[in-house]
Amino acid sequence: MTSSTIFDRLFGGNLILRIAIGIALGIGLALIWPAAARSAMLLGTLFVQALKAVAPILVLVLVAAALANQKKGGQAQLRPIVILYLVGTLSAAFIAVTVSSIFPTTLILDVTDITVDPPQGIGEVLNGLLFKLVDNPVSAIMNGNFIGILVWGIAIGLGMRHAKEGSREMLTDISHAITSIVRVVIRLAPLGIFGLVAGNLAEFGFSALGGYVRILTVLLGCMLIVALILNPLIVWTMIRRNPYPIVITALRESGITAFFTRSSAANIPVNLSLCEKLGLDENTYAVSIPLGATINMAGAAITITVLTLAATHTLGISVDLPTAFLLSVIAALSACGASGVAGGSLLLIPLACGLFGISDEIAIQVVAVGFVISVLQDSAETALNSSTDVVFTAAVSEAYSRKK
Image (cartoon, rainbow, N blue to C red):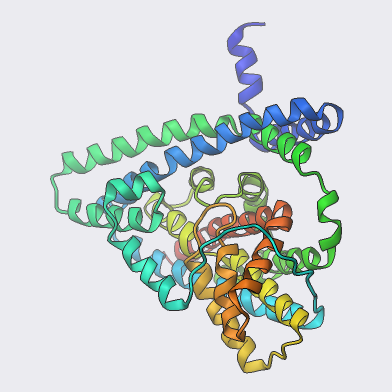
């Protein structure tokens, strides 16, 4: 057997099948040889780092190239996608309030040594967003500030729309070159996920989650409702046909990878590749996918809402309907400001807790609980956020193509 044949078998073929094999091997290694499994975590860390390294420059170039060469009608598709992002995030917060009311949960709030620097108010969140908008482009790329990268990509793309055709074609060629690098990284996904599964199971296991089963059940239940009921309903209103093929495809090919990378930003290249595979308009998804990684945060809205209401139940604070509605709005707005990295939504919990007069000292303990259950919570949250980006982009693209 030649070396090229071995490479093709390891890194070619059905990506989902190879990821499934990687997961199985990771679980097996963690059970049989925990020490080796911890060492295998290096493979997962390298994979996530590779995705994070290529994502910022990929977003900048793809957004700029898409807008510079955008055909008539491209902007028309972006508007409804953004609307779906906002509606989906707010609806997810409403669902979290409803489920938390039906199944109230309490927390064991112990003093922790975790040090965080959460926002102190909605004004601070908005203030931070404004500064991210005008960030230096080099700083934005180096620090993974995708809001700033999007702004610069849009500015460059709009400016290049009036450039000579050769210049615009060069920008497109650069985007294709960066995309080819991304494809190589994605082919290594099974190896990276093998390392992530093996390392995480060997390091944390599931025993630490035993005392938090109820709160995890509420969180994951809300996310499943959004993924399997709310999102299909939203898609159906757009395309008026069975929405589940789109939803299941996105969960399978985007959600699985996002579950293990635990980073919406790192999953941008995966989503872009999936949109290309689905035959969507590049002028649309090159902008909507990076945008979704920054503002489409249904999972984050659920996390913020459920943990905040768990704190109120624990402290015996009564929550009336108007206050619950206000919490949903604040959770949705805060979620849009959450960073696209692991644990980004947890740091915004004190902001929502402040609505009920809960002190920062107690709120930080709620954040600590979030970190304990983040082994599953953050993974499921990212899988929902990232797969929904593809779901809404595909739905609007199909609805728009039918109108032509």
